[in-house]
Length: 469
Image 1 (spheres, rainbow, N blue to C red):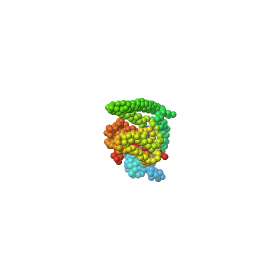
Image 2: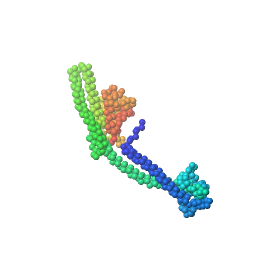
Image 3: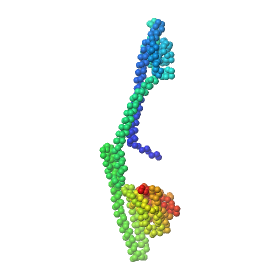
């Protein structure tokens, strides 16, 4: 399923403010162009009407025909511009050429105009669009009246050119105004969204260790309302984190102490029974089971508390530490238990310090859990090796054994809390060790990986980033 496209508030505001402005500008340009066409058409029609009337006055009846008083100078004035020349024709009777250009387009069929009235129509002449003004005149005598048609035409190219010039003269200032308005809108939106950017930076600076209320000065009411809601949420989260921390502290005190005391009392009772009544094996076995259950309960409580500390909500601070020294210390502490279980525990670490950003307590818990699992499930006579190597800008930490390992089908589920795999049936695990290790690894920006060793055992490894020197 495709991820929905992220919506930017800035983008939405710009779209809803500038898009209507662009539509209005295009509409204004379209209206301006059409109005310019109308006005230029009116001007040209008036010019053509005056020209046809002036030409009609130059045609006078003479005897049985007409006398045209049309000087050559006036004719040259009409025809001097080849791009905008005026075409004319006088015919009497109508459509019988008398003067001008015979190619003049005829009036449309069905035009009924009174003598002396001008009418206009569009036509094509010599491959171009022209505007024609025509006028019927009544000439001659009362005994012999004659009807005369005067036509004057002009190209419509000038009409469109004038309309384009008017559009450019009007559109360019409007376009400049629109661009200026867009810049002002952009600046206004940026200034208006600045309180939201400040709020985002304040929220990004917050952490589980610092949940102080957010203060924003000179912010709009909407941002202040949002800030108030966030502060209410931060206050609630702060209360829950504090409650969780109190629970961890109380649980550590209330659970560890009585369980440790119960284990001590059980050991004392077993010792006294061995001295007083060495022939009571049944009671001794029952006390051994009680002792085992108590030890397992203590381990479960310790793992639960370690898991609670490893979760992000615990708000622990990462510091710079030497991982090589920490690994040596934890491995040394695990030697006595490995010897008692007849396990050959070794450490292969490169010389020198390996500085990382981490939490010493959590990393100790991580390595201790890995070693505990390896020692517990490898079996007597097995080998467990701790590897520590530099790999580029990171350090590689692994615990390898030659035990039975974990089947591939279970390697994903072993990280679930309280899940005990088939190999754990013979152990005393609670199903939390690897879940704790994975949670701690994530807190340090890494991930625990399970693999096979050349000897057929299990390899649990992770990589941690080195601190630049």
